[in-house]
Image (cartoon, rainbow, N blue to C red; front, top):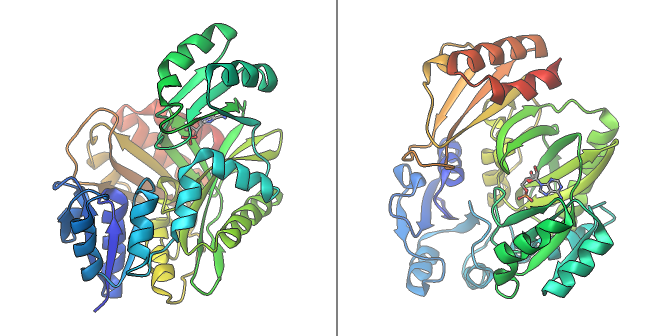
Length: 379
Ligand code: AMP
């Protein structure tokens, strides 16, 4: 009996546990919140990632460990890796935790990125804004997610406010200034690399964010095959450079037909949730297969899929459940502003059927604005 340990007990860990059940796997989740939603499906050790006693207990009870959360302190990941196999490796985790290290690696690997500069002081910020130009975006290097720890600088008058908001974090988590990309599309590559180096990727996903948080994803993305190959080659390059094992997601901006890398997520990703129903093997099961060193499953898509995120509170399930291609995912969390509480995936054999179903769901739930950009892309 194999027990997979997961650091972090959110919806990603929960969906991993669900995907691992048919493989006969057991799970153990480490999270500081005793009501973490993965705990509804897997036993838990309740403790902080820096709590040595909790980590030691966790290590003693698992055969292999992985993450549902990338901001596990690198020291904790390294400590664990000395005791049990940990995938992805702590170095990959450390690079993906730091926007500066991540963008520097992209550049080294000839993966195009928006212009960026490290910011340690107000003087650095003034100089970098002058160099990179406006508009631009100031971000924390570490611990930012879902648009948090970001400040958009539209005009020179915003520089003071940006520094007031994020300047105090310049020495703790560090700051980076990036050019603001007026992209036509945001896309992501979700890919998996096995312990033996085998690499597979799902078709590109097109994503729409609201206030920095993913709102909808469409697969396959409406991009030409040239872009698909380029994006996949970037993800492969990164996975190989980091000797990565497991699922990773690379977020890209597409502007004037050129791809610019934004971010690497060293874990299963929200933009890959559609793979549960929309592909032969889900990202969750392939992540587990990679981590365990067993054969990877096919990443072939079955038709077309759209995922809609439910943020804050769950809408009425009926509008999705009554659709033949509608699939419902309630993470079992309490409603809270800005919280990801669930998602729906709509799968269809062709884009016409997908658009019709989405339009009906959008109408029934009063969420026309959420489905509108997807319908526009499908047109
Ligand atoms: P991130 O946390 O870096 O993934 O940012 C969250 C979202 O903010 C992205 O998905 C984009 O929609 C937007 N964003 C972040 N960085 C930039 C940028 N340099 N230019 C334009 N939009 C951005």
